[in-house]
Image (cartoon, rainbow, N blue to C red):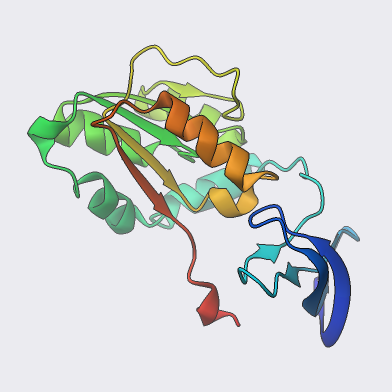
Length: 193
């Protein structure tokens, strides 16, 4: 059983986003059923949250993957992001953190684009097989080589999970041509604040 304890404390922080060093606010402490502790610290300068000090290996079980797919997985939001680009403006589409790969299937089938994605979890492996799309079952790193230069890169609800967000953005930028469009999205944290 997950336990949440709301608190008002300060904690030492070196913000990976803006570089602030000092005290940040800690508003909760969460302990999951396996004893893993999550205690986010808010940066007072840029208001970003450091959720985990170090990356945690995590992958869904087959049951969780099936439940995600069967529940609809937010396909309407995914389709909206993909279809925000004019179809004739894109040839090569890349989704970094593509999950099951619904964005790739939509871009391929509805728009006719060449598609590829990165997803290190079991969702990516399952989706690549089920949807017949290219999903590299790995993290997107500076060593990642792309088969085609993308015209459109989507990375939805990923940047808040990477340990070095600025380096992640710099890596994305290195992959982009001058005409490439990058579409980033993050959860609306005011909903939970």
